[in-house]
Amino acid sequence: MAEGRHLPADELREVADGRVITGEDARELGLVDELGNFYTAVDLAMKEAGATGEPSLVYPPEEGARFFEQLVSGGARAAAQAIRAELQAEASEARQPGLYFLSR
Image (cartoon, rainbow, N blue to C red; front, side, top):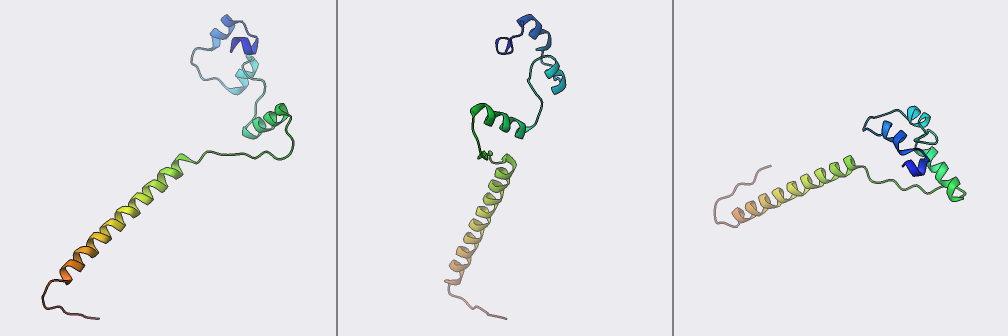
């Protein structure tokens, strides 16, 4: 980082001690060029790449959503297996000789 930022290594070591610092402090120390958000970074990347037009952004799936989908699909699978087992057991009992009553 010292080379890329053209900072003396000893000066960088003074702040690189594991502390969390604000963006404003990082800018004042020369650790970042400018402050912004995700879209600021996209705009800068587009400019640096010489790209024009509307960028096509790809977002990773949300971990929480995948966990919920897995949880729900696992529960649905377990419920389907339980229903299948119950139906098979009832069908097996119905094949046995006996006296059965039907009601409405």
